[in-house]
Length: 268
Image 1 (cartoon, one colour):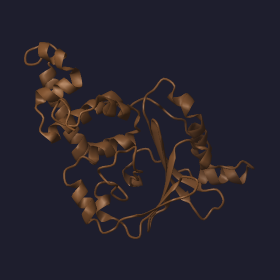
Image 2 (image 1 turned 90 degrees about the horizontal axis):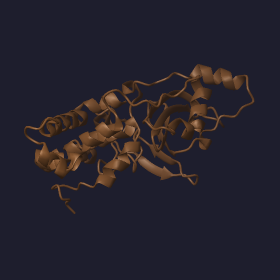
Image 3 (image 1 turned 45 degrees about the vertical axis):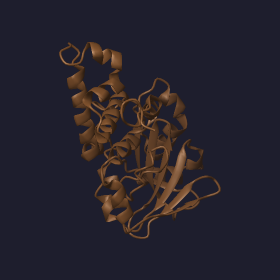
């Protein structure tokens, strides 16, 4: 059902996205790219899905998906599904936070009786098995996402080869992630920084996504501005006001389009 602004605008939907990881934000913008659904339907390499009794999703690729790799992905999830609804596996070479933890972890386990288990880490888990690449494990929960390459030959404990973690801001976030913090410290001795990326605060990304959705649906700038800033607010200050809501709306639309087309990679 179309909302009051000419598209499916629901404030609650966009506010819920504030707790996405940056990996999730990248998918939210990229999945809106016109034609992406058609590309997925044309992709020759599609994964097979299976859910284990413990809730972990297993995803197997028979052949590499070249179409997906052009977007920085191992495979193309259904663009109709949000980052909360589907696991997203980014190629490690485009992610800026990769940490090589193989040697550190191997030596740590060799000198310790401690058992490393990712089952105790909170969050949804999915495992991707792809030809020519290490098996991947993704862990996603409110506010963070981790992607690890694992050595499945090292039973019973998978070894982390690299870890990529993107966090959102939040006053109690680190308290909520003690288990994941321990996990990463165990792998590579790293500690987490919960500060938002400069220029990509969650509220800014939310407003850019609202502006992008409005633009894609054909809404006017004023309708988009009303959704973001409030109809009463822009009535008092649209064309010539000191707060320049018209130009701010235009910039949000432009940034939303850039994030969809290429800038989403800056979030990884």
